[in-house]
Image (tube, rainbow, N blue to C red):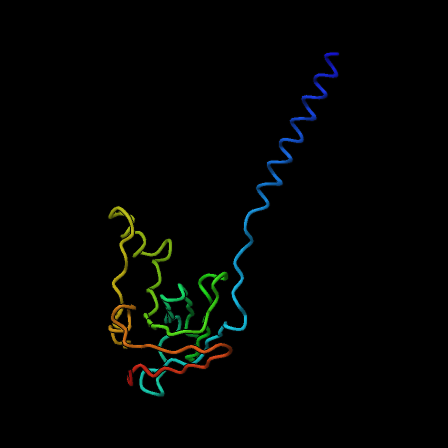
Length: 164
């Protein structure tokens, strides 16, 4: 009789635990963007039509109306390709503000004098930002004057910062 009660309790417990796992897996599925309205963005970024911006310069596209942000970095040829910040939103067509920021200075390498001095002073302090040829107005979305209409499908957007 006792064994029968233990068996019923164990069976009830297993069914209860299994039910919890089944219910937990029945939530809403991930949002999938409408592919017909999605865009890809790539292009070249220059300073005077010919001079490429430095490698690892960041470029960020932001569309508050669609809650979309996409970013990328400039390669050695001055080209960039943008990736969506949120795969569930993607890069929807719309009007985007564009921000261009210089590459961050590299952190002090472990074992170097700069690293040792920083650690002796209670921790590393951010390195001074090197002078950049990229006009400061482009360093933040709220001050940038670059506004681009992005259409569905592939977009090649070449930007010459000296002309903006």
